[in-house]
Image 1 (cartoon, rainbow, N blue to C red):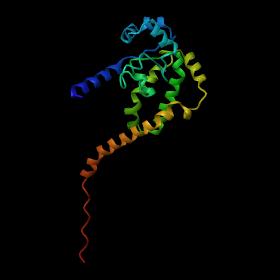
Image 2: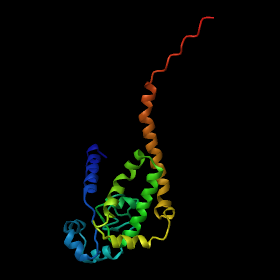
Image 3: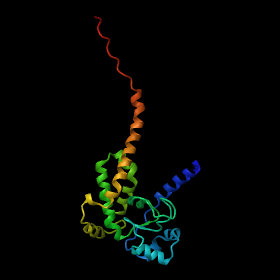
Image 4: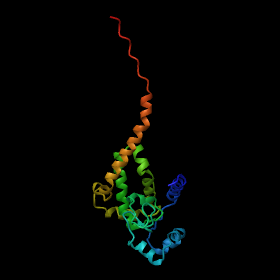
Length: 205
């Protein structure tokens, strides 16, 4: 892959992340077509596919996916391998009230990792996703306070049994180890460059 291709991919990823989330308070096709016409056009879905998107047939853990075989986060033509939180910044994701319980579980997952990791470790890995999630779950922005309370009441499991945890833990440990290695490599030249204190000459015998 050429350097130009890598730069173009990185710029495309930044542009996708900058797009606002597609959130439907009612989960109706009419609302999607009315409020997000550009999103509907970009997905290129017919009425039947839109109905599947909103009925739950295309649901993943935290959202409904416009096209799991698009190859946006993995090989084209194969189911998307992305972690659940990647959907938060994905332009193919659609969030509706039925996703609220799992979005709240994901917020608890972020909260646990925030407590376990340093800020320098957490922000590069989870920071942008946690920020997007806070915006989606902010009362009165996309969902009413009553809808958020009703979703919270559906969660009977504890944060330690979140569906995200078993799948994500090994991956997160690898990320933390890689980040620590980068920090160590960054600090090593400074350590090598320190001047050693000269010891006082021993008194003549």
